[in-house]
Length: 240
Image 1: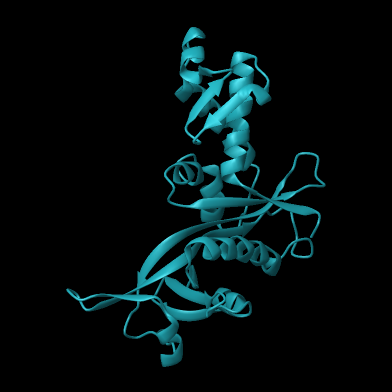
Image 2: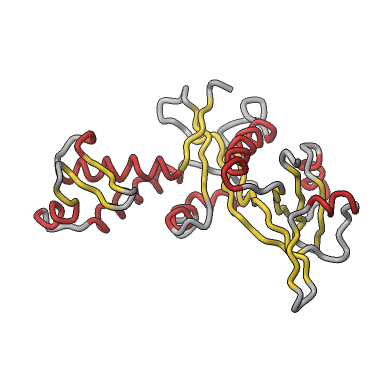
């Protein structure tokens, strides 16, 4: 798997922000300094002040950078699932959710490709779900779940780490990178999340199609509950 490397959308955006600032102000990257990941200074001078002298703004520079990022993300295509493609291709999806901190997106990049093609990607977020009374979990597994009660409505709420999106670029075959390979990257990130802030249930929601559900069950996921359209599957991570 040395052919592929994982990159966060956060780092990609920051690289493009720096590139756009460098181009706009004609300064070297090394002279651009982030302070608390919010304020930006160049040789002690605030970015907004320097941009005002160029009759532009930080917002304009950042939007230009994000437009370039979006062009790069748009090279990803998954014809079988337009939602998977749209999450990367739509400016109101992954970039907006990254900036709002509602999810985190990770790209699996082909380091042997001259254009650094996106071979696959995934997005994770936190999501509380309601455990229905009709769930199929054993009592032993229910005891392991991080359940909180909503006494007012007599609901059982589970805190989960959601794999919100996962997909492979049509340009790559399963022989080159398959679901297990992608999930290895996913759980690599999730184990870091768990180390810092906890959480032991990974959730994925897929179309309620037996073949698709079975596909994830082969990789250790277990069905929690479903309805006509959606199936929720879970997997414990290092419970102790």
